[in-house]
Image (cartoon, rainbow, N blue to C red):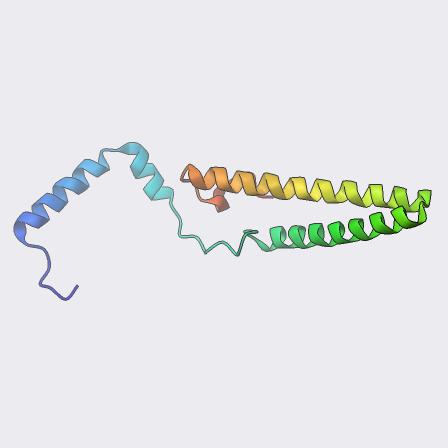
Length: 120
């Protein structure tokens, strides 16, 4: 601020507000345990999440390619390989969705996502 600061009545009001806020134990606990966090890296949140998202994208591309090849050739081996890749893709996608939901839930409740027990 470029001004001279707070006047005496403003300091008294500020001190009263701070005294009232200190009596709120839940707020005091949240403020004491609050840690500054780095901005979340994109939609994935961490490098591990980024790797999982990249793996999911690659598996889905491979699954589409295998599906097209299996549909054209009708080879049972290609169908089984496609089924296996598709299951892995679905598991990775489900894990990404669970991480996203847990991060969104903890952020909505006011708990930083980094302190969540769901991060693995």
